Image (cartoon, helix red, strand yellow):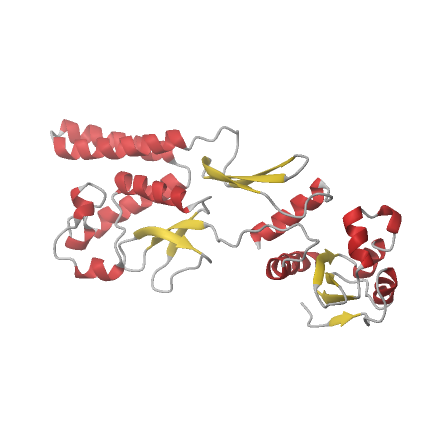
Amino acid sequence: MTVESLKSLPTVIGVEALRAAIAHAPQSPGVYRMINEHGDIMYIGKARQLKNRLSQYTQIGALSGMKLRMVNQISAVEWTLTRNEGEALLLEANLIKKHQPRYNVLLRDDKSFPYIVLDEALGFARIGKHRGKTQTNKKGGSFYFGPFPSAGAVDATIAVLQKAFLLRNCSDNMFASRTRPCLQYQIKRCAAPCVDYVSAEQYGELVAQAKDFLAGKSTQVQEALRAQMAVASEAMEYERAANLRDRLTAISRMAQKTVAHAAAIGEADVFALHRTENAVCMQVMFYRGGQYFGGRAYFPSHTAEAPDNEIMEAFLGQFYA
């Protein structure tokens, strides 16, 4: 992205101010900002060719009532050049989120989505909840799964994963200082690697099974557990067989709750738009590893006169920014 930014002189208002800016606008990709006489940003948009895009606003007869009101208030136009249209899309979404212009379709939600993280820094992976940017842990690496539609969905999934795969959720400091197993072990939600009740190799197998399950390989994981349960029963290791049965039950219930009802969906975010006379609803559905993990509804603002394709484009840009 270049640092170049130009603007028209705020000596006239409306179409004349717009035409003054167009005279200097380049045929380059970038992001433009419509500004009123008070210095407020009214609208932010992107363009493959700035001059052509800005010229469309001078075609008064083709503008909606909302866009016409905006054009009549223009005092200046600023723009920033980008190297390509994709870069312009990202910049546009970030600027809209920052300035919340009154004429843009706005996704009024500043919460980042939660993930499940398997932090493997100490060699015995810890399962937990994560918000914000996902990145590799410098000490050993982290495995992220998501995003999920809500913190509640993450908490419910983690609870099932602990029952099914006996993964620890304690902090690294607590893990390093334990001398006896905690309550999580007593209620059969942890294998207690902190006190060597399970070897590093055995715990690694549990982590690998959890990753397979989250990757959509639920059937393979269940088959492996059934085979282990049969072997334990034949060897009359009934307590171990019962533990495997409980784990298998937890996985089966989880798989039943998250069955995808659409064919051939692996990793996907599915979006649907519905319009009424007074509002627009955007519904997002989350599929991970072929399983449905819930959805979330949004009601973007400033949509009354915006066409569906414009709403969808603006929503997606801000959603993924």
